Each structure stands twice: as structure tokens, then as C-alpha cells.
Length: 503
Ligand code: SF4
Image (cartoon, rainbow, N blue to C red; front, top):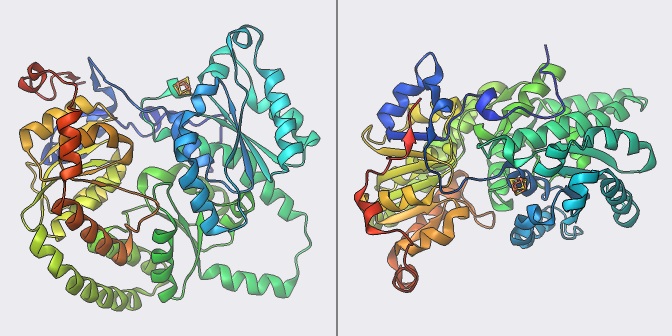
């Protein structure tokens, strides 16, 4: 039976028993994940926390990528701050999909103290009408912050009442930040809005058209060789082109969504034989629902980063279409070419120790790639942990004694770990770049939508850029000299994980 789509997605602490506080080695983590109670990760906590991300911000990052869409931030104007920093990159990525695209259009209802008393409904209605009349988008997405959730604005009901007054599809995304400590709940919140208000409306509309038999036959044939690849906001067009190149070589067609898609593309979810996730953390809420409701199978396994990850990702897809032998030939050819190209880089990178920090899936596959380049892993740090990481951990060839810190931000723990473990290079989620630069070490962003990280060409690009940052880290040394980290010596003398409270 299909998973029921409620008004809002539940927090991942409840749905997946995910956790944000763990200290220990990879071996200990693996043992905890294997326990029948799921390791009770979501019971652990910190007695002190420096910062953690807000799911609203990550929802906005994903929503801003949608083409032909206006996003309404229903809340105080400050909640939309992230959009300013990401506007340039988002516009560029949209234009790489469709050169006619403009910038992200975002409207804030700018709720203030008096709205907290009298309610935000009037402002929301005005914003929806203005978005529809002025920009004529295909969809208007209302992203609801903490304030409407606290004062009780029923965004779904308001949009339902307004739907017949506007031409755009109205979508409610309930993603208030206070609801969860797990930023990744944002993906579920966005998909919840898409399932409630976008996929359903588009599919219902399609049913009204009279099918043509020949069209149907052609479409069915094409669909049987088509894969929906669920992209992530941290990857850009270069990654998509590399993955499309590999899948096209296996004579498969590819649709990329949800990021940088237009609302109409969510109808195309049904025009495919298989849904494939790029990152296990991202898509299970959506692809499981599409499977249960419409019968389309899905794969959630590893990320196509590094030789091992890419081969495993491709073979999973090939197995579904019964073309494993063709995939093995392709992998062999790509592997040989990449191996040869990496040799000069391995000579320079051999023995260097890396600190890898970011999303759970990405850090493990990147660690695998770093090992393939002859480097060592000094430490890993992940925003959160859940069972999606298990297949990736199975494959990992790093030492079981390697430390892993599960921490949504909390850069004070990172500072202590880096001082103790003395890595040579940091591979880091871009969001932590400001404070990370103060360590005085070379830093390679763990992702950057403008660069290629995935597939075989991505592995080469990472090696090339790692060599470059390691060869010259003078810039970060200068930052460390003139803008040192803010922590006292007494913190570095303390045990790194002293504030973690086990369940
Ligand atoms: S936690 Fe709430 S108030 Fe703060 S930015 Fe996130 S949505 Fe806005």
C-alpha cells in the first residue's frame, strides 16, 4: 500500500531513527548500525552545541533550483537569507539546462510582530496573487518557516482555496526549522510538497488527454529504456553530463530531476522504467512513494563518485535492464583509461592524510576515492547518520580505527580534531568553508556545482584539483596568521567529544 502523504513530512529522527551525535571509530559505528535497535542514534545528544542547520534553508536551496517557478518565503524576511548567497550559482545552473532562464524569483511575506498576533494569511494571499499576475510561473511554491507553524497559519488550506483563482500550480512546503535537528529532513519536506500538489495535479491533468495508440507504443518503448536519475543540489551540469555519457553508452535515456527541473518534469517521473537515486540521503521519501503508488522500481545504493562507487552505481542499473556484461565492458575500458591518467597524481598525493567532512554518503565515497589516490584518511565528519550509509560502509577499505564525528556543524569539535590528528588536507562541505580556512591547511570543497566530481572524469578532476591545492596552501596560511580560530587553549586540552551525551 502506498505511503500516505500527510500535510508535512515527519522529522527524520522519527522516520529513519537518524542521529546527529556520535563519537568513535568507524568500527564502532559499524557495530552500532548493525544492532537490532538501530544503535539508538537518535537518542544521543550534546550538552553543548555550537550551531546546527535549519531544514528551511536547505529546502529553499532545493526549491530555488526549480525552473519557471516563484518561491514565496512565508515568514520573516531573514529566513530567506541563504538565497542571496546562492543566487548566482543557481541562475548559472538553470541556464545550463535552459539558456532562456532568468534568476530565481523569490518573494517574502515579511511577517512581523503584528502578523504574529493577527496571522499571516492576508499577506500570503497577496503574495500568491502578485506572484501569479506579475511573473506568470508554472508553479508557485510557498515555503513555510517557523512563524506560520507557531501561529497556526494553515498554508495548505489557504492554497487549496486559492487554486482556482490563479493559473500556476500552488504547492505548500511545510519546512519550519524548529521541527528537526536533521537538515536532511528538508528533502522530505520538499518531496512532500511535490507529491501533494505537483505530481498529482500534473498526472491527473494528463489523464484527461485522449491517448493515441501509435504514440502510446512509441512512448512505451522509449520509457522502457529510460532512467530517472535523482540529482542533488550539490552537483551541477558537468556531473549530469558525465553520468548521461555513461548511461547513454549503455543505450539508456536519462531524465534528471528534481533539481533544476521545471514543474512539468515531475509528470515525466512516470515515463521511465527505473528511478535511480544518486545519494541515499536524498530521495527515499519520494521514490518509495512513486514505487508504491505507480509501480516504478527504484535503486538507492551508493553515489557514483570514485572508480569503485561509479562501477557499483552503473552495475546496479545495468542489472535491472539485464545488460550487466555490456556495463562490465564499459567499466573496464573507463577504469583502464582513468587508472593511467591518475598515475602522475598518485605519485604526488601518496601518503598525504585527509580530513573529509560533509554529508554521510558523500564523505564515505570520497574517502574511497582518496584512498584510491594513495592517500590516508585522518578523520571523517558527517552531518548525521542513518542506515542508508550501510552499503557504502561495507565497501570501504579504510581502517576501522579511523575516527568519525557525527555532528551537524559544531566546528569547535572539528578544530579540536584537526589540531590532534594533523591532516595534510581538508575536503569539506562548502557551508563550513569560512571557519575551515582558518586552520591554515589546503582545503578542497567536497562539492561545487561548477566542477565535475562524479563518474570517471570527476575522479580525475578531484585528483587534479587536490594536487593543485596541496602544492600551494599559502592563501590559507595567511588567513590562519591574520584571522586565527576563536577557541581558547583550554578547549584543545579537553576531550573532543566531552559534550556528547550517549543514550
Ligand atoms: S529556524 Fe525557523 S526562523 Fe530560523 S531561519 Fe529556520 S525557518 Fe527561519
